[in-house]
Length: 309
Image (cartoon, rainbow, N blue to C red; front, side, top):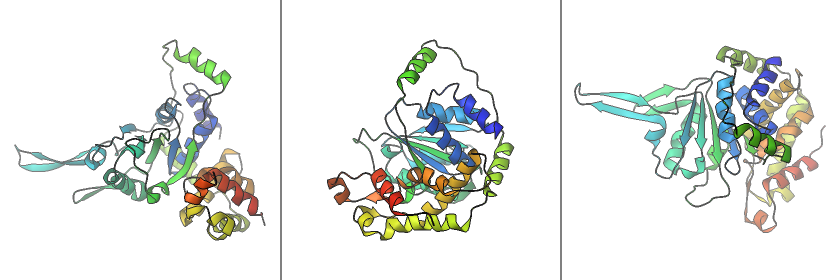
């Protein structure tokens, strides 16, 4: 756990504030799952991901998603060599550990489909060849909700592949001053490598051993079924939380317990991470828009309705 604290300290050398962002990145890394980051530009999303890759000794690639992006620009293609009259496979940025899909909602559906296979199956198909991705593979996607021109809504199946959806906050007044002081000097900040891949394997294995009582499983089931069966909740939803949401809640609860120095999950772990897990999995309908209901409002309604047994 001391090494996790060291990871946070190293990232904080470059990233001022954003404690929730750093924590969510670590949770997804420890759970070996993907994360969706949302809000305006210039809030340290790319910087946080790049710094994390340095600290935990993982390869990092950034892909700028645009409307003219092709699947082959993302995963690679077969290249013909006239001199040998043979084809070879050229692998592109998806073959990395941490892949930053910047402004993911600007790419068309064909590109999203190519990314979906990598996220769901941890493999990539190029023509008739299938390549396994590294087990420490993680997609960190960003989207800017303030600009809608030239954007495409992410398919619900792809949204469900993200473990968490994190809304990035603006810095506080004190943090704003610290940012100006640090980045107006053009100083090079040295980042130390704290973890190796083998260390991550050990930590991820430890999290899988964290105890979950049957009452926790029942509590998670009640929360998810409330989103499906409660009439007051259902009237605002177009789609309800899938079984993948239940799995995600257990995984993040284990990671949160680990970060809190516990080897067992408590209901507060579920409640603490519930909003981040559900906010992109409950798809609102037009009635919710008419009543000014947001996903976070629906999530709070679910938490208030379900009691811990």
